[in-house]
Amino acid sequence: MSSDYREPSTVERLAALMDYQTLRGLLPDFAQEIKQDRALLDAMGLQPKTRNLIDFGPAALSRLEAKAIKDFDVRRQLELTAKANFDAQNQAHGLILSLMEARNHSDLARRLNEEVRSRFGLVSATIALEDTAPVPLGWMTLDYGGVDYIIGETGLSLLGPEGVCRALFGEDVRRIKSAAVLRTAMWRDGRPGAVAFGSADFDGFSPEMGAELVAFVTRVVERVAERWPVLS
View 1 (spheres, rainbow, N blue to C red):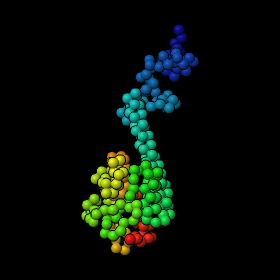
View 2 (view 1 turned 120 degrees about the horizontal axis):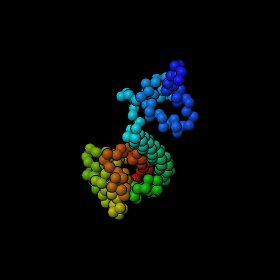
View 3 (view 1 turned 60 degrees about the vertical axis):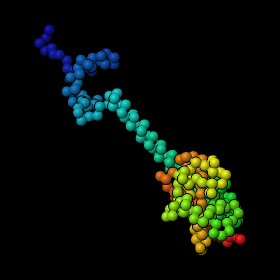
């Protein structure tokens, strides 16, 4: 054997192998050398695993997958919430336009009830006045002090099952599980009354919910109702 003979380097031996399976089978034998061969690792776009590198083993991949699913669920929930808010605003816009076309007090009450049932799936919506003076046809009549009794002396609104009462919803009260009741003060004398919305779901209205939408509808009802005097 010639004295010039030398063992081929790691790179030379690997380069001489054309069959991938053969190459793959030999790689574990050179694991330590490969880890220390910075030039080879750089050429292959690899880095040795250190404590500063993320471990992409099965457990880590499982955690990443779970986080990705959670992030997707959060984004999806935000998208659904935004869509629901957008749809609610569109439905409220249509409701307001219908209320503004009312021809009298009775027509206003009818439109309010029909629109909230068809657009929001509620059981009923009513307009009520305390009986200190005549009450329009189709409106609910409350005893004097009835609004304070239902909502509270200082309350402007009440959301939840506590607002469900026959005085506001009549026979529909049997199907109503939660309600939103908003205080009103109509005409120059600020006659006390209320606008009530009834839902068949226990969580249809709850104290934790914001009352902005139903409050806005109630203010529109007030303004439209004040177009006409209450006839004796």
